Amino acid sequence: ILNVEQSPQSLHVQEGDSTNFTCSFPSSNFYALHWYRWETAKSPEALFVMTLNGDEKKKGRISATLNTKEGYSYLYIKGSQPEDSATYLCALYSGNYQLIWGAGTKLIIKP
Amino acid sequence: DSGVTQTPKHLITATGQRVTLRCSPRSGDLSVYWYQQSLDQGLQFLIQYYNGEERAKGNILERFSAQQFPDLHSELNLSSLELGDSALYFCASTKGGNSYEQYFGPGTRLTVT
Image 1: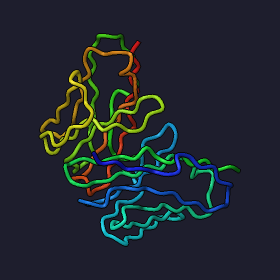
Image 2 (image 1 turned 45 degrees about the vertical axis):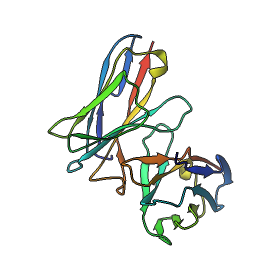
Image 3 (image 1 turned 90 degrees about the horizontal axis):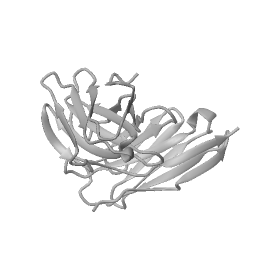
């Protein structure tokens, strides 16, 4: 059974600080790794879909890297703002027509 | 606005009843996914359809069923409802398979009393 793990489970960060968290996954049969941001009372929103080892993607102050050989992806947020408070989910596609979702990292930005 | 619509927004019903949740994917998207989020739980994948055909099944109960129609909208049917079925049900769509980002609808909040 494939398992996608995210750490830490939750994170409190001071406004203005930068932060990062991890998504770990089995490195065999890798097709794609997704990142989503899920704000409270809203729907998950796609950030990135990464497919190549060494991929690095950026959207504003948020960026992500991918290492498929060792089975991890990092999500970085530079200069955290209150609007970054959300749960960040990663999901692995390793074939079999399903995404395997992590439990998420809950990020709380303290003003 | 993701372009995915779900109706109704809220639904309150009694145990033992049957309900139907509806989802319209983004224009041009062929795949529809259904997810359940129970209180304090993460996203649980239920089922996926691609261009009218079932593609993948997750932790979907036998009391639940779904279909995707020729116009690509999808319905999730929940029957013999139990208190534990109270949850937020999301629909998401993509243009193809799982290498494409999913666009989520606003969800349907189901409360079973």
